[in-house]
Amino acid sequence: MGFEDAAGNIPPGRGTLYKLNDTSCFESLEPVLPGVSVSNGLAWNGDSTRMYYIDSPTKQIAVFNYNPVTAAISNRKTFYDFKTDNIPGVPDGMTIDANGDLWIANYNGAQVLHVSGKSGKLLGKLKIPAEKVSSVTFGGPQLDKLYVTTISRGVTSEKFHEYPMTGKVLEVSGLGVKGTKNNRIREKCFRPS
Image (cartoon, rainbow, N blue to C red):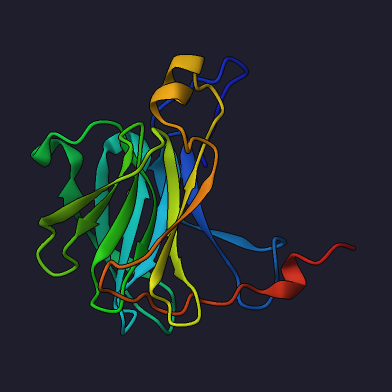
């Protein structure tokens, strides 16, 4: 996430995307992308040479060249822009499928977007019965189920009636695609002391 004041306002450009150093957990965070507002989705292509990144308030998905040896990013470009297809809301979480295509949670848009990982073109919209779609990932034994998280915070009773699955985790099957295995976290960094 990014900086948020006591009133819940997020001033643009006050955050930084960091990476964990190979030899430590949080003792040695390295800034890699300053001037962001709300860091969200991250995904890498199959050979880890491209990194996709979401800074939600920009309504864009950026793509970087990525060096899998050094974890350095370079050559930032806008890959997909919500404004191009008049998509409401903002991009939030994101995952990538085995074909290299992106699946993007559409916060305040009640959908998941399917975007070509090659061209950056919108391939489809998956309607979700919850307005605040927050993240997505593939799972299941065959990695052929898309799990979708949604948020209930700040949702009015009228919106709960309109979007009955608000605040739930949904499982979507039958998409005809499979996900990829996620990278493992450094478990030692997240164990209780």
